[in-house]
Each structure stands twice: as C-alpha cells, then as structure tokens.
Image (tube, rainbow, N blue to C red; front, side, top):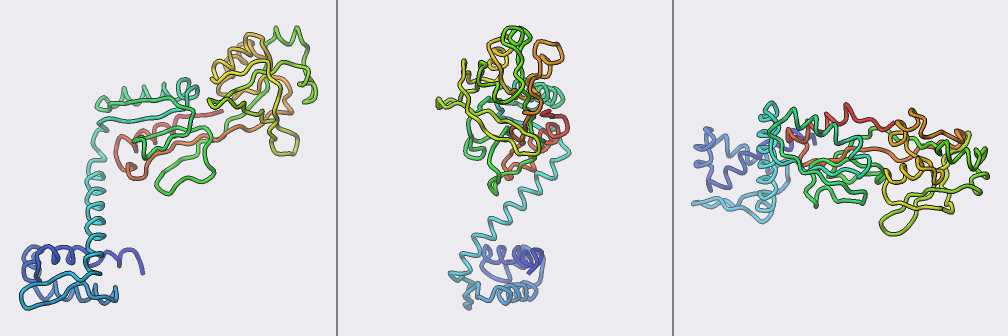
Length: 302
C-alpha cells in the first residue's frame, strides 16, 4: 500500500471522532453526511476493522478505533508542524541555536564559519559548546553538532552529512631532527621521542600508521609526553619535544612556514571521518537547515 493511500480519510476520521456524528463532522468539513459516511466505510474496509460503534444517538470509537485515533492525531499534528516550518522557510533564521563542536577542530575551523553565519543572520542566538566526548544530540538538546569520528552507522533519528576524512602526516621540528636525526622507517621511531594524544579516561590513543598497498594499522608507542588537547600536542612537536602524526588541518600552517617538517611519507594514513549531525525532528527549522548547508559548503578537513 502506497503512503499516499494510507493518508486518505484520516482527516475525516479524526473530525468524525471529535464531532461524534457524521452530520456534525460533515458541517465542520463542508461535506455531505453521505460523503463522510462513505469515507469512514472505505477507511474501515482498507484497515479491515471497525473504527466506530454506531448507535442511534452517537458514534463511539471502538478499542481499535481509539488506538488508531491517537496515532492519526499525532500524524496530523506533525504534518501541520511541518507545513508551518516549510511556510517559514523563506523567513530569516532566528532563535536559540545550540551547537556542539570538537574542541580543537571546532575552535580552529568551525568557529570562523559559525561567526560568519551569525553575522549574516542577526536573529540567531547561538550557544556553542566544545567537547571531544560522545554527546547525545537529541537528549542534550543540540541542534547541530560537528563530529570527528563517530559510529559507522547513525541512529535513525539523526540526520548526518559526511564531509571527508582527515589525513595524518608524521611531523617533527627542524631543531629536533637536527639533534636526533631523521627516521627513515617505522622501526626507527622506536629510538625517537613520541608526543601522544591522551583521552580524558587516562588512555592513550594509538598512532594510525599507513603502509604501501595496505590499510592503516593502529600501533601503541612509548611516549615522552602525553597531552589531551590537539593544539597542545602540536605545540609540543613545534617546540622540539618529539614526533607525532598530526592531522593536516592542524599542522598545515606550521608545515608551510617551516616550523614543522614532514617525515616518513610512506606512513601517512587516513585519520577519522568528519560529519555534521542534527536531529531529524529539527531538520526543517530554518536555523538548522541553513547552518548545516553553510557548514557543508565551506567546511574542509584536509
């Protein structure tokens, strides 16, 4: 049965249940009593169940009819809400906009775009948080989230847009390499200092190491320094404290300026994927729809 067929007669059914009779429903809907009765009869035939107990005085919903009525009321309310949102789509986005961003990537890459968006839409009132931990977008009341990493499959109540995958390159400062030499292979890294990324739970993220014609592998390393912030990890490598695989979106400026030197290009690997995520229930809100579109057009991870 096609979706359009499922909607036929629902408005008449709901109006009849509210009015208590075919005649009263017909007056509300500007139809004839006969047309209302035939509509209800067709709906009952399609569903294979009686929706009303018919008496000489009044119609009364059956148990099945009452259960179906609750669902139909909710469906019609959601359709009405969607129509209001679509009607307002051409209007200026407005209202409180709750945005959650990954800490380092959010500050460096997303905030400039978000500030640009806010400057273009003065009626939007953003509330921005920065977290690298998992957040429940729906339960936490978030309108739009940007995530590096995440599940392979997303819950059915979330919209998501894949924007690409970060690229990791091994880097060190010229001063460090001048003092310790340039490693030529993965095995050489064992004799060098590593600057690792640590999680809030005290664990250390393994290095993602690429390989020729082989998928990236995860490798734990002995670390001279462990930091729980991407910018601090970058600062430590620039300061000559060791080697680390860094995302190109984080290290490109330092590489271009010569403050960092790329090493071991054969070990470059893909890092984590970038997604924009939002509750599907809010997708049609202008403030959400426009921000998702703005970020998707301008946000780059490489």
